[in-house]
Length: 200
Image 1 (cartoon, helix red, strand yellow):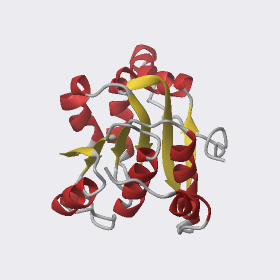
Image 2 (cartoon, rainbow, N blue to C red):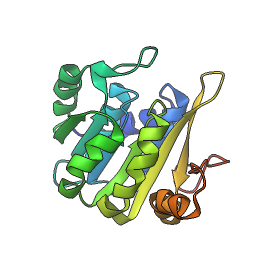
Image 3 (cartoon, rainbow, N blue to C red):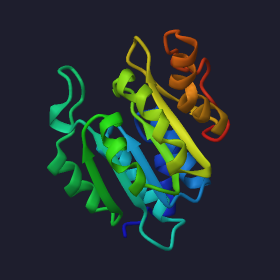
C-alpha cells in the first residue's frame, strides 16, 4: 500500500492547494482511519492523498468505498470517470469499491455490506433530496466514534467542511419519520458554522 512520507504529509496538511482540503488531510493524520466512505467524489487527487495519509497509521490497507454518479452526473457538475477513478484509487493500495448511482439507491442496495466506517465524506455536489432519503441507512454503517464531514461551496466558489456529531446524524436519520408523523415538510439539517472540532 502507498504511504505518504512525513514531509509530504506536512505539505498536504499545511501547504497544498486548495487550502480547504487541508482540513481533511489533517483529520486523516489525527485519527486512525481504516475505513472511508465517500459520497460524491469531488476530487480524485484529494481522495488519493487522503488514503495515502491514512495508510501512514494503518497496518492493513484502507477500505475505501466511493458512491458517485460518475459519467451520469448532472450537467455543470464535476464528473469523475468510473474507469479512471478505479485505476487511480487502486494505485494507493487501498481496497477499493466504487458504486455508481445516487446516495439513496446505492446505500439501499449496499448498506448491509458496509460496516465500521471511520470517516464519511460527503461532497458538495451531492443531490440534497437523494442525500436526505439516504440518512436512514447511515447510522448503522458508522463506527461509534466515526467522523462525518460535509463539503459545502459558497456562492463565490470557495469550499469548506462542516462536521456532524453522532446526534446530528441520528436526528437526520429519524427526520423523515418524524415529518411523516407530524404531516409537515421534511427539513434538512443545515450546519450553520464550519466546525473546528477535529479538522482545525
